[in-house]
Length: 287
Image (tube, rainbow, N blue to C red; front, side, top):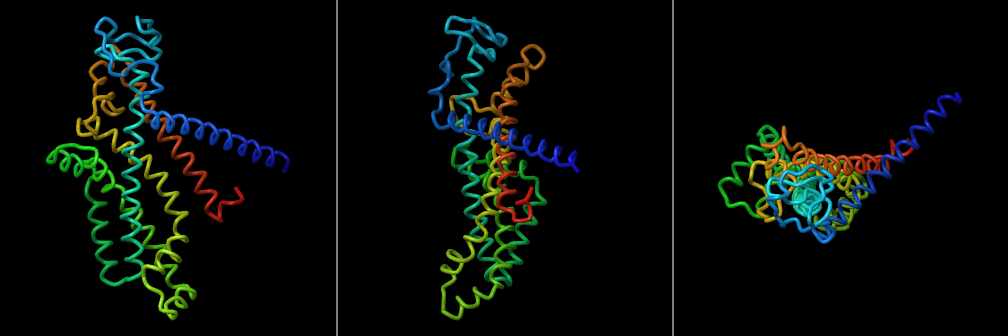
């Protein structure tokens, strides 16, 4: 019994340590996204052919390149710092748009029922069966890439889980007696959904949004990797991976460090999302 308690305490401490590390990493990356390249040790756009493809720790005229330089002599660390903004900004806007559309459609379908439910399930099943990345490449390839277009495309790939969760939760809530009482008191549909349904499903939507944010970051990086991401002078993390793939055998740092930045950000978001789910789920409160 004592051994089991000791293991439980040890696991709890480990979980808390992992959560603390994830929160610190996430806070740092969010701060970098807010400040842009203001915290970058060097100018991300500054090029120097004399310092091209230098390994990590190389000391140049402008200082030490802690993570090395790329094919045109730009500092990798500064590029990663500057690339945090488009990664989080675009992904955050896309998840917000996907959540707004998905929750709105899901709540109305769960409240109204009937043909609206059939239409929602039909559309979501078609989208889930169709490869998202192929759809995204097709849309962005036809229309000129822009920030708004990339946000819309990523939101298009993330709204389905929001709609399904909102639909299933709303369908359970509208069967409660207090909702029938609001109907008797001639409460409007807007009032019922906004004041009685939305507050009850919001915790699950917030948890879902944290996981969707990690997915959106990977989507944005994938689009940037194939050259269909956000048009910006400063390379995004996905574009850095694309530019460094030709030098993987001679300059491994061009792909390892941007890839690790994506991995670290998505992992930190997922760890925080797991903890948030444990807090909001009554069945897991005692864990």
